Length: 111
Image 1: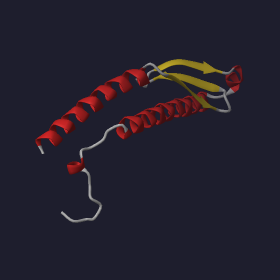
Image 2: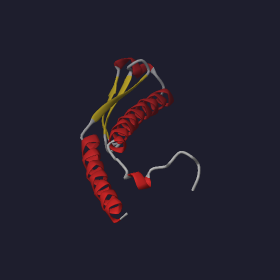
Image 3: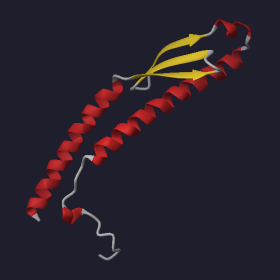
């Protein structure tokens, strides 16, 4: 059992290192959120910071509420893309962890 706990601690450290690398990797990524058939584009980084907003000339004739709604939709689109990227990366980290046999569920439902 001591060996199993030692192995588990090694796996935990590996996962912690992988998570730190993942956070750095995602933070360096940029995604584009779009709304209004491309009339509004938002560039966002992995820290959920909006870096750039692009508004199409056609929006000049729109009222401010419409533009604000389109901006919110583009921002939400970019946020979803960052979350999807993070979720995909997390699945990779989680699948790399191998628990010692003593810590795995037996699946029989017995304790």
